[in-house]
Image (cartoon, rainbow, N blue to C red):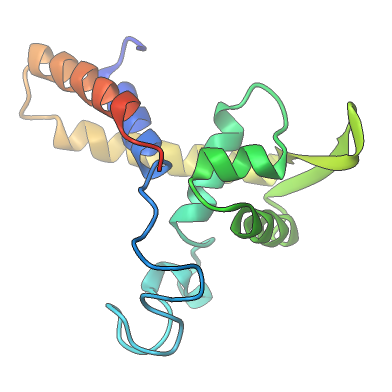
Length: 167
């Protein structure tokens, strides 16, 4: 835990986002395919619309968060585990993020057949900005809490995030 409960709460919330249980449908079934209805009507959800200036969806944010939290570049398999998606989805996220200039691939020094993924300066700038906005939102939500309540919430939420099932 850090000294600022808002940082701890934001980190616990980010960790929970990366541990979503797998959906109860098979790999070939889709709960809201693009352009075929779903909770947003026809088309993609609002966060996926490039016209709004957004960089992608929650999975891309979890990918960037995972790379920030890692002490070194990650393999696609490590990203899949950290983000809570299967390996093919993680590979697509890395490819898209590479095209956007947010991440870069580099050779794995231990295995020439593999690549590792690291944040680019542009990716670092983007995630830093997002984390600042997220931290500000948490601080705003905590304004009516006492210091003791903030610390308790941070401690309990971190404990809850650690116990959250990975699958």
